[in-house]
Length: 208
Picture (cartoon, rainbow, N blue to C red):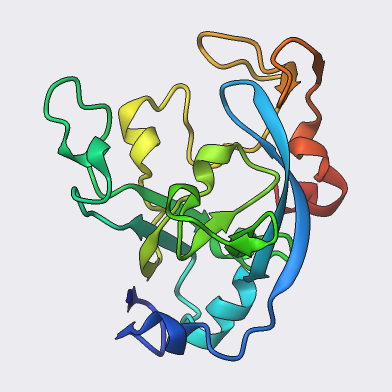
């Protein structure tokens, strides 16, 4: 189930099938750039995030949407860790509503021609290809529409490295490494230049 709350006309806890009923599944191939300077090209299946947001009818006062991931230590061993724990759970991410309703923003339900497996974020995963990969929250079970900017999990952990917007920018280095180049998997040894907004600047730069 997915809990929807905050500034929208249809807050409720939805059965997943009911929430996404009627959406046409699309295939999209997107570049994905990790903040750790590696990248991939990934074939996703899913639907535009805008379709889901339009169904939930956010109020004019809503400026952001916050997502939370499933907390279930039986499925996610990392959530059981108490010693040297990296993050507090649930994992939280968010977008401005104009970002979330941009045509490129996507909810993935499949990958490589198959249903999305648990390790890739089943049943719903956010894909925002012009941002670093950590913005792509997995296993979404909550959406909250708000007037106030959410504080994301990695932003809490290390704000100098993981800002809220996290747009791919080769001119701004991570505190510990350059973001000017990336290793395109499966190779770790051949690098290519990183493009602003991960190469999607002609479509999204006007948002900023």
